[in-house]
Image (cartoon, rainbow, N blue to C red; front, side):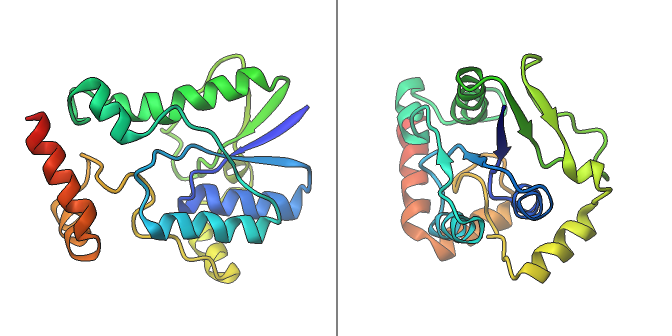
Amino acid sequence: MKHIVALSGGKDSSALALRLDEVEPRDYTFLCTPTGDELPEMLAHWENLECLLGKPLTRITNGTLNGLIEEFGALPNWRQRWCTRRLKIEPCLAYLKRNQPAILYVGLRADEEERQGIYSSDVACRFPLREWGWGLAKVKNYLKERGVVIPTRTDCARCYGQRLPEWRRLLERHPEVYAEAEAQEEATG
């Protein structure tokens, strides 16, 4: 049986991976799905998690965001949200299919019962944060106790779902990424 932890690097999955490794030590595979559009802070966070967990993260990809923008001739948007499906969900499910039997550990909290996630019925899943009764406050407190700081932006740098303050922060902190996003928007219409 393989034990695979879905590790995006956000607060919930980071807390899950660290705590699970403490209370249920096993030979876990810590699985992440980079898009090629992560900011340097996120890449540094993944490296820090590798140090804390004592093993490398298993990175699986299905191309990059820029590659898919070229393939589709469009930016992802609310009508064409192919980015998450192609860059995150499909490679994760393909990896799980190749690595059966397995249990997938997912960081959905006890205070977000409405969230179910998108998983294959062929994959056994566990939700330890829910089993432990961990809500947002417990997750944040645990990470603080461990000295783990989650980056402000844990998903794609140029996600279409960002709010205006997030785009402003991108412009101020990473003007080169912002300029590339502007050029892509101009090129794709």
